Length: 206
Image (cartoon, rainbow, N blue to C red; front, side, top):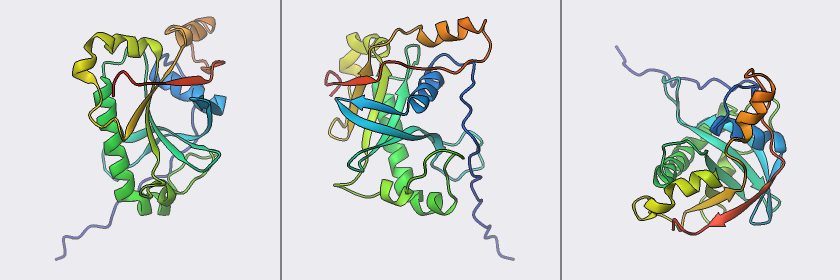
């Protein structure tokens, strides 16, 4: 009897929930998506989708990309988000990004065939995203300034191992911005938002 099993179809993501209780990384993720575009060193990046699984697995907590964007020239941005209290180091974030991109390259056709995009979010081609240089996506770690300050005195231990492949960006916002927004709703669900959309490169960790 054959032991070959059919490849498990990865279920298509549903709608993105923007009404949440989280006040950290998930809040930043939702706020960016709702904001629509950000300026990374002055270059406008349009956010396409968030939290997309990039592996085919029975595990409900599959590895997922935090946020994917594209600039006006068609350059994709594959980004890992961190926020103030997160215990992951910049080097951890770098490892995650590099692993996710390898998974995308390996699973691109399946991701495309299974239409792995959230409903109502702008679609894109996983095949194009997985292309090799010179069209490979920019891999970015994006976090608030407080997160980066946390690692400032430990930079020699946590600086990136592949600075030629991964770039760091910071945004100057209050670390309590989302907690304060939720407080207005008396601790209930709220829709996180950002007014600031300028991110600047950090070279300390390279």
